[in-house]
Image (cartoon, rainbow, N blue to C red):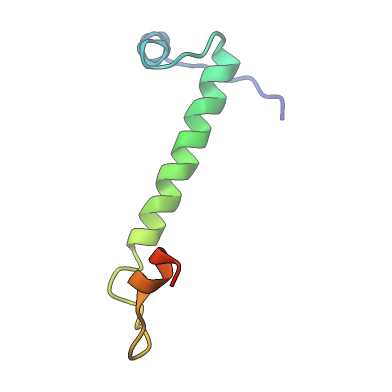
Length: 66
């Protein structure tokens, strides 16, 4: 999607310090991916305490491949 936006120059300069991106386009794409990833993780945390497991469910045995 092509779009034109006005970015805070100081914020862009600071973001380049933390990124290996070479262009503003790369930088914005990286920032959007991280934003979506972090928001997705936060949504999973909202489920804490709302899931009930079946009696006798042993998640550790699944991790060990037993």
